[in-house]
Image (tube, rainbow, N blue to C red; front, side, top):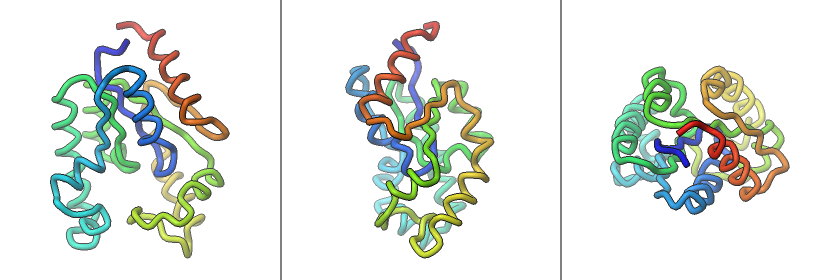
Length: 172
């Protein structure tokens, strides 16, 4: 099994947290949700961080938390949807872990995010336009991964099992 952290990347609603919990359980490793670490450190929600400090400050917090959790050893880490945008974050993830990018189609993501109120970059009124634009903008960064898995029409268990099978085939 992996000797380095497994880092899940992907757009919001791709299943990083759900798959990450299941994968961590299967690997008997700790699960770390990077967004939850940021919220705990800041003492306020991501929406509040965006509203009071702005996206740039949130991204700085995100980078600092990523660096810290990657120093903590083997774990399954669910990164936030935008963690891949910073070159330094991608380089850090690639050098210290195995990066697994989860992919979902626009209709699937919109369905999963319907009614979400905890996503500062997602708003219902122009959701499909905003999500499509963000997905397109980030695609090149998501592609910078060791493994890419389409989650459309797959259960959390199926995606986790697929990742496990691929990890078993990787050199130690």
